[in-house]
Image (cartoon, rainbow, N blue to C red):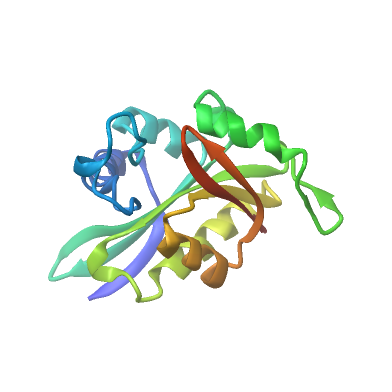
Length: 189
C-alpha cells in the first residue's frame, strides 16, 4: 500500500461529498442520533459546493493505492473568506479577525484563508497522514495567504490535540456560537 497526496479535481467532488456525508459527525463527542433536538451536528459540503471550492480554493487529498484500487483516505480543505462569509459561524469568525495579531502582523481577510475541515479515514489515523495533509496544504496556500484560520469545537479534543501539537496551530481566541463553544486557531504560513 502506498499513500500519495495531490490537489483535488472536479472529478473528485462526488466522492468527497459522499465521504463528508458518511463521516460528518465523526468530530462530535456524542452521536447525532442522541443529540437533543436543535443541537448542532457536523457540517458537510455538497458536490456543488465542493466543485466551487476546488475552483476557488484548495482541497488536498491523501490517497491509498492497494492492488490497483485507489481510494481517498483523507482530505483537507482551505478557501477564501469570500466563499465562506455567508455562513453564520464563518461570518462570526470573520468579525474576530481584526483582533488577532501574530507576531508583528494583524490577521485580515486579505492575508488569511479559512482552513478546514480535515478528515482522515478511521483506519488510517495515527500514521502521519494528518501532518502530511497540513504540510501539503500549507505549501499551496503560502503563495497567496500568510495565515490559515480555523475553529475547533471545545469537545473535539482529538482534533484540538492534533492541531496544536502536530500542526503548530496557535489558539488565539475562544468563542460561543449556537450553544457550542469553539477554539479559534491560526497557523502562520
